[in-house]
Image (cartoon, rainbow, N blue to C red; front, side, top):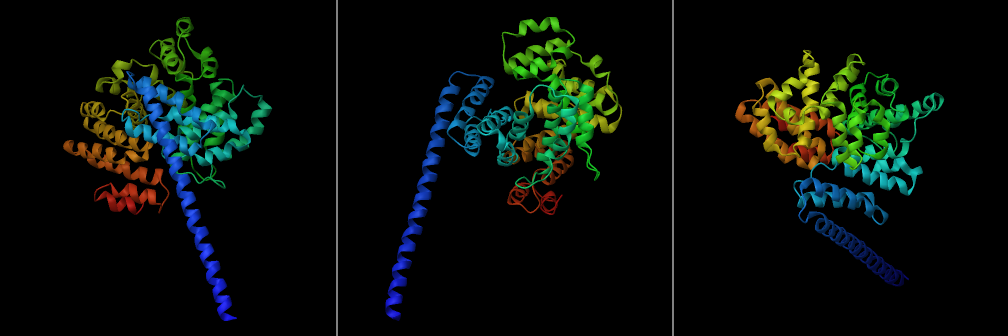
Length: 425
């Protein structure tokens, strides 16, 4: 009996091993097929978008081609394709708009699962454009009535908070509240004062946390940087010089947005003066986009733009926002930023290097090596400490404590900051 049972057990074990081995080969085959498919998509898109095109034209082409694939691939695969394109086209770093479009396309498959789309969004990729796109896709519509808005407020208050399936980093959460600022302009039909009330109600928490700054900045970014057709219709009545806008109808998207900047006459001060306190300051900070573009790329222009306030805290906010924006304007060319930084007074220079480095991480966590290189360059001017302290701040802000991602991030940072990074900044 023992021998029979033993023989049966051996046969059963043999079949189980065969099934396990077959499963492993099956899964490996599926993974290999998927990898091959992704590589084929990447090759096709690069060929279609790269021939004789400028970096801006290539970016627009990528953003048109990749989201189309969501009909047959997953959101995760779409971002993998984006990453592989970035590896081969090193000029393509700013993929925030791509993140928007990927999640909006994924959302369209099943709007009822919009929170699931948010949960799938990759951390530290494309400046969290994926989260922005999912929120906008779900809530963006015509303005709602007062009663409808009041019923919506509880959902907005909890939308960016931790929940089952979503445990956001500080960066993801701040990005989410920033998006609520954008959204508020839609919900109120571009009534900026009512939008500010929404930010006050959703951004200030009972436990002392405060996301008001990032929410308010979302409001004014929506005003000064329209991109989609509904964006332009939304903010049309806010533009002071509407007579110049008719010539912009020949353009679409970013080109049309750049044309519309002329409608502000190079100065948004009269528009921003209607607000008070932090709202006025947020308005001025975000108005950089309608300022003299060539002037603001110079050290003198940077100092002049942020001279509206003598408060040290407000100046830091202004420089921070401006250096982040200039990185995008310079298409993440560190050499141009280095040249700008070294032309600034020492205290502003140190912040310039620090914000340049952290902007890399905020855009894509895989750019840490380039961030470190910026801080090492700052060492030549004796201002590397603030740069590394900024990267320590982002270690807490961008990664969960104890995560492998944090460990990998910290491994790039030299001592004495490495130990502080591992131990939580």
